[in-house]
Image 1 (cartoon, rainbow, N blue to C red):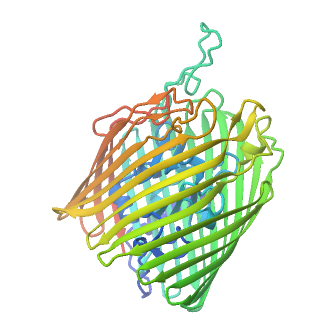
Image 2: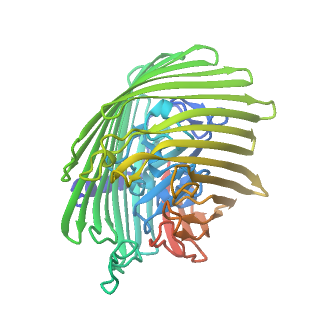
Image 3: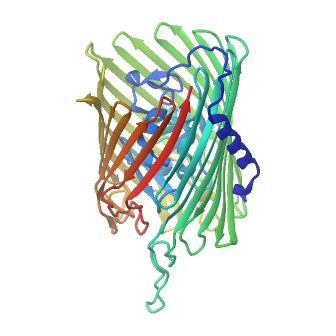
Amino acid sequence: MFLRSPLFPTALAAAIVLALPVHAFAQSAGDATDLDDVVVTGTRTAVSVEDSLVPAQVIDRAEIERSQATSLVQLLNGRAGITLSNQGGLGKISGLNLRGAEADHVLVLIDGVRIGSATAGLPALQDLPVEQIERIEIVRGPRSSLYGSEAIGGVVQIFTRRGGKGLSRHFKLGGGSHDLREVAGGFAWHGERGWLGADGAYQSTDGINACRGRGPDPSIPFDFGAGCFTDEPDRDGYRNVSLNVRGGYRFTDALSAEANFLDAQGDNEFDGSWTNRSKVRQQVFGGKLAFAPSDKFNLALTVGRNRDDSDDYHDQAHASFFGTRRDQAALQGDYAFAEGQLLSVGADWQRDEIDSDTDFDQTRRDNKAAFVEYQGSFGAHRVQASLRRDDNDQFGEHTTGSAGYGYSFANGLKLTASYATGFKAPSFNDLYYPFFGNPDLKPEASKSLNLGVAQYRDGWNWTFNVYETRVEDLIAYDSLIFLPNNIDKARIRGAELTVATTLWGWDVSTQLSRTDPRNDGDGFNHDNLLPRRPQNSARIDLDRAFGKFRIGATGFGASHRYDEVANLTRLAGYGTLDLRAEFAINDEWSVQAQARNVFDREYETVAWYNQPGREYGLTLRYSAK
């Protein structure tokens, strides 16, 4: 049982003790680089948000704490281009759709390491603890020409907690509705040459009744039930224990090494006729060796591993085990051969392996890739182009590319245009699941065009992007061969508007999204909306400080969506309002309070699966540097 491991209570206690006030012992060190306005995900090199030729967004630690989000799903919901579906509250299976693409068309990285289940093809977003996150970068649009498979809708990269100059400590104690209990703490230290840190977090809730489904009705012929196909009107709890450690050392001004490790273990109860409990584990290890002998050249070798394990039960009886491991390595060199001219060349390697009590025909595959990228700046003009070739054991070779252009005016206005191709490799379930897999499947492929206009000025900025994506060879069930096959197509069009400014002392952030994701294949579902994606969504955040007090609100709204490809089950649109307040007791201690869904709106993002109503929370925080 994962949660009974002796490692976690000890590590969590140590992290919390270190988070409490102690005498500073850190050596003097230079200020850490401020990355708040820089993204590295869109190009695999550091680029300011203003200079990015693809739509990008950064959520930093200050915004995470200000939002008082208790999960990654809450934090990301309503961001430009993002819609989420959830099966019953905190810790339950959640799918993220970026720009109308499928949930498995979004690449998720943690500290540069690709994560996700190689069997299901999805990352377990619901099990990634928000207290372990330092910042999040969201890149909208295909990035397969840099990362390979899965990056059709875009890339979400999560960076775990870091530290700045000297010694910093933090601590959190919170509670709320549905018997929510949270405790977290950690420290980070940065000296002249070395740095290290550790964080632990615990979260537990008794939950809500996740599913309002029903079992078969014996009085109705051929009735199999609905929803989760069982009658279990109980509360479905969730617990998560996580540990994050990292460290590094700069041997010389040119040579440095670092490593990081994240382990998150969950125990999730849900409603189901076959299984109704899962003990899950997400584990991410990453290491990096960097050599930068001059400002013009940088060489980096990175290695990583992601484990995604799930032990499934029905009540106390063990039902199945699915475990996957992703080993990966990359070598990348960046050469600034002239002023404003950067050439990047790299090679990636990845191995997916399955460890399961289900008998798959194949349990391992390797992927080798090489890529090249050019970024150039010529006065007001910026260009970017990249090309990548993947060679996979299962589906052979696949080539992707991208090109972008931007022009900046003197008043901060910027015009951009980009075109990119992407692909998604079939999962092991698609290919080899017993009696349901098709080993002849090809990768799903896409072509995307984005046109954007943006303006960045002191104290305010806005962006507007329109896009179209066409996806071919989508994997769907083929009634002619009774197996999945590459028979579907999709056409997705959309627009996004973001505005951030300060009005009368209020910090205002507005994000509006319009997406039209259509089935473009032949057959009865042609021109239907793709399932579980609303066409319209909006989010607005308001925050203001009054001395030691800070208040805020988040309003979110989404139009209706359909639950399946046939568009027969319509899920109504809805809107929610969250309120929050914070009081700074002193420079180190603060108290936060929140009320979510204050109007107690009932809604579903997946048919038959309930969402929490009105919720309250109270948190005590400590932070010292």
